[in-house]
Image (cartoon, one colour):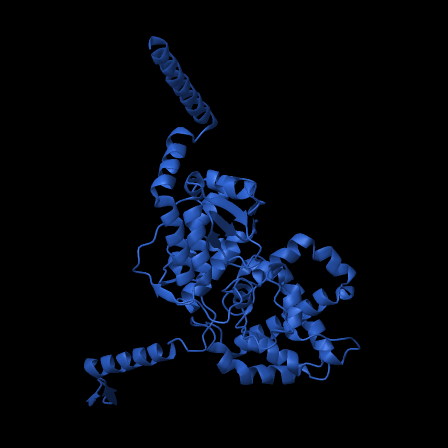
Length: 435
């Protein structure tokens, strides 16, 4: 730096352009270091190339949870409702005043912030307020859902079933999460257990609230040591098979392909509802492909999209949901494929339109990256392809595709075969008569 005199004789410090550039680069490096994702990170903004395919699937409709959507003007209507639940939570936890709660969340703030992958544009006080209010709201919501006698007349008017369902779905969105450990700490610290009731654990509260999605029947008592990062993570665990050892996985440079349900059925594959409640446990043996029963409803796309986004961001090498969606994407290509699964009671189509279901599964995999494949699913692909490609089954498939793919073609093919047989019989009798 050099000292120079301005026109009135005052001495000023001059920073040359090179030194200024060095300072700016150092500031950039500091910012880059502070923005690195922590190993504790588990809550993400959905990558833009995936998010743009269906913005609504990742955006809460009525309730914002956490910092990412806290400023969304669309969600301000329910803010008063959320604050009312937070106040009720404070009244239940009456041994701890609001000042103590604020101080406690301020202590947790650094570890809570590290759970979010993206930069949070809230200052310290705003962040603490969002975490505290949202955690209190969730715990009060769980309380009232579990003890349904707590609901007031005002709530009965406001919380219609359709709205309660939307709130539940909002709580499962990847961008709309609190770290589960925060809920645990606030739950343990509160005095709600002093109520004269047989009070459940937070895990039991949570399992009860999301019971609709717990198809495999996970028991909160038997799984008391389960690690849950947040509610989207819990939803994923509700879909995973119970296994002592995870299946081996192979790099995605393997080229895979599978024929559609219609093509496999044409080759002689029989479709059957699997006895397993776990959606991911498909099996093929003795010409029978067993697929667990599943219901396609209005929220199916939203839930699958958020599970896939979670795996893309947090579990790229344990992508069990992606394994399943990838296989269903192969099996379902047209409404005819959906019809086969519906007819076999494997799929319940609450959307009504088979084309809508086919489009749903065809679009889920767009912009999704698969870095490895489950060995179990690779074996399933191999077995089904080997069955389809056997000479006899391939011939049957070709006949079904080219000559029997519509009722009229099937009738015409049967008639042609019948006429051919009659001609052969007539020829035989003619030859015998000539002899």
